[in-house]
Length: 306
Image (cartoon, rainbow, N blue to C red; front, side, top):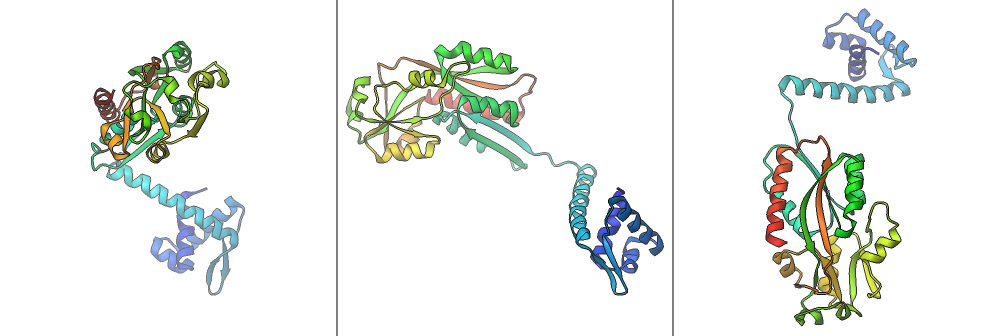
């Protein structure tokens, strides 16, 4: 199919006449007529009904002209880009655990964006989906979180899949709860103290090569009878703020978040389990300037809050 012939057909459809189209296209009418017939023959359809009153689109012609306009528009855009200079977009994509210090880093990172065109993607999810997003969904960066005792499972899987990993931080979980929660007044909180309260938990733990039931049992032990499972952080803060019977395990929460939702952050001496957050990306991927800006903010937020 000849692109020039397509352009001719679009112009004939616009003006409704071979005579008028030949004038605007600066082509002899017999040559224009022959080009349209060749195009129809190539496609195996009739684009125009020829009448004494002009050229009218057939149903097939209407469909074709719609596609032709889109194609010619894209060709013009490509032509314009390379003639006038390509407008480069800043692109950044990351998939992360639901963590306050990371979202705080992302918020401050967003302030560093210039006036240049940009496409930014930030997705909160579990480690399995983060890895999948990098391998299959065009995400450049990811942060995964897991308990230290699962270190060998994760690192073996990351190496097998050709992913580079770098330590972001290690930490033990803290508790956050409403300032009106009776436990907020206790100096030292134990596992036994938490019985009878409602845990806000994320419902999608994951460890490679281990059954989900085993991971859930370790991450969500049986000492709590009531849990509310959520998948995003906005709801968790509303729940913690409104219901003084709730609590949640977190890596750490910035002071401004605690104050905004009237929450307090406490340590539990019984919880000594160490967790790791790892930055991951595909081997061979070169960190961009905008990637490095985010990582700088991430390190600053880690130092400040963890």
